[in-house]
Image (cartoon, rainbow, N blue to C red):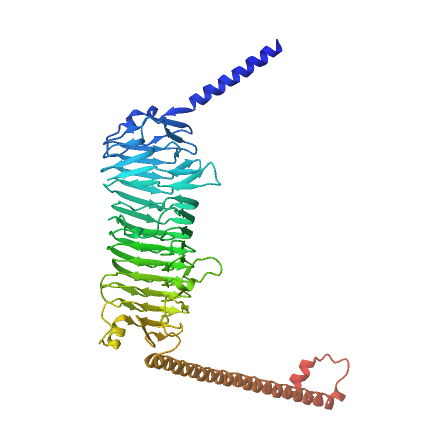
Length: 551
């Protein structure tokens, strides 16, 4: 009987657990229909509970939806459709929700005229997270995205977002992604076939683009897209790629803008662009950015330790590059000097006329030729101005030849070298730059030109005049202050002496007055003694009366 009761109790507990599990799972379609079918301009917010919601997929064409979850709200597709949210002209807001993405479906297809705000959400996968969004002409904004893995030892990403031929817009804000492998030859948020991508205030750390199986040769000329990309206030740290561009690869005839970005310890094992690889005919602007300890390395060539830029109208302004280098990777004892190592910091090819480099600093960069910058070719004459070069090194290299510029090496300057005025070229090419790198600092083709970049430690005559004038003015100012201080000291001393003299006079007057009083008392005592016989002890005279009598 007791065993039967125990069995009944266990059965009851099992049934209770099953009932609870069933009731804790709901379908997304069970949410209030007024919210799912909203067509107004101001969406109502549907607050989802801490449950798992299963959906068959929602047709949200011409609808406005706002779903907000709690700490443990989960949504998963049941597999009957290939996307949770589809159709055109939808406006969707999803916030604080965990999306289970292990089942090979899209969270949303962002179609024409659709807008999706994806904020404070988590993508949850076992070991690989990918194929989450497809943008086909719409606009997707992702803010504060989180990635969550069941297997933390193998965290991989594979094409989180893809674009159709219709393009579309992607804006990623305030997102931090670290310690993941990126499968294939694409970056985390790829620009291919986009209309525009904007990455703002994001941080990427320990990103490994695991594309070693993809061929590097001539891949930079294939499938050039037309999308634009904007990166602002972002940071890439310890990002590596087996292809070109350790942190970013931009192969597009669209426009690229990078502002206030940092690249630290990035490496391209494909040999081009340790941090950034750019190919295309658009406008490329890199402003207020910093590069530190970036490397481009490969077995047969290495070009652009931090930046490799091929084509386009380029502007580099207020850019700092430190400790950047290119290197040939080969087994121990292998002669690496037979392979070109070009542009320790920057490699330039096919730049359009009016491209410019302004107010940059390159320090401690190394290569075979062009310790700082190697210019392979330009359509017109490149202008480098108001820039500073420090301790850059062009190492001996058989493939590079005997001529090697520590700072700049030109294989092309946009004009023929024969029968030209080198002084005029110098004035137009390099303006107000300085360097303390070893000479020759500048080489053009097979000629090295000494003195083309002024010494960073030497001053021009007008600069020396300013320094001397400032020194004389400083000395004069100090002298005036000393004279003024001495004068004030003398005035103060005189005042002190005067006060001491007055005090002495007052003391003398007091002494004279005391002496007069003493003499007066002595005179009184003499008179009293003179008349003392006529006075008897019984006479009731006071001393004061004696004084009055005498007076």
